[in-house]
Image 1: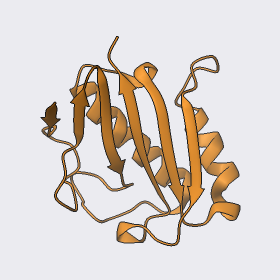
Image 2: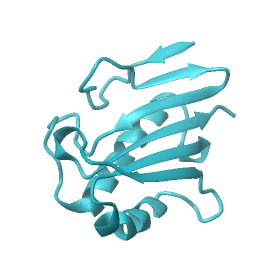
Image 3: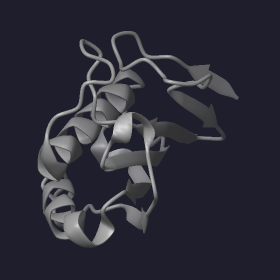
Length: 127
């Protein structure tokens, strides 16, 4: 196994790696909608938070010489599932070509770090 910390990515809020690689799979830790420049400061609303999370994930996987097309599974956690699902879904979908959507789970949760509205983690596969 390889444990990865990506220079310039958001700093973890707990003791974990940005990603762990094993047998060709890359497991990316859930990302929050903050930025490396302003940890804990979140954009307003689910659309901007979803964009921020996806940009953080993209930065990490590109740091591992992967891209969004290598994602095989994503897990999305929403604190306001009923209210935010449609807007999150539209924003999330905009990051992928229509024929390259990864498998996905989306669940409602009671709370996330920094009072975020969303967190997403990934499983990628090396080509």
